[in-house]
Length: 209
Image 1: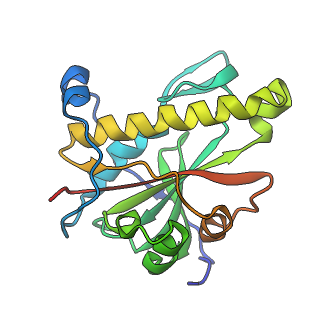
Image 2: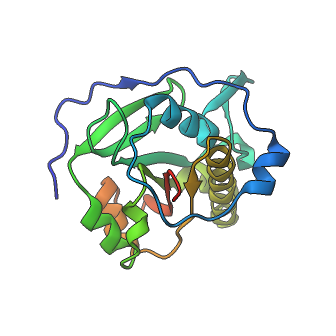
């Protein structure tokens, strides 16, 4: 596996725009896409996807409010991405910081084989420009809601995924949600322990054929 990044200087993302395709049009045109073209993605497009997935949309009651609803506004998710072909970014694993709308490099390198293997040989898991990897930090929700918190966490993963679907559609991109993967292998890719934090969802995004 490629080496962990030693210098983790944050990468500031372009400011997201707040206008685009109507929600109705995005819903009507949303499809699961498993075949992607080899085309570079602008950093502005990635910025838009990340903002739509889990970006900060307001600050109220002393907390950041995100693009996806969360039980108790506790926001248990960390959004990791595997960048394959985005202008201005090295290939590798990054973590999104919603509050500052920036990326933190975690690992640099080619993870195609690792991601495909972890996703049971589904080659489209590493076929787009970027693969979203949704990681839940369980205690953020379970400390308030106990065992029921796990249900809320999985519901929230669905909210985030749908945001990615609709924004991808709005941008002329394609995506597909993947739930079939080896937990331990995906956790190793992003560097989480699988106990206090674990990968819940995998979602590649790219330009459809």
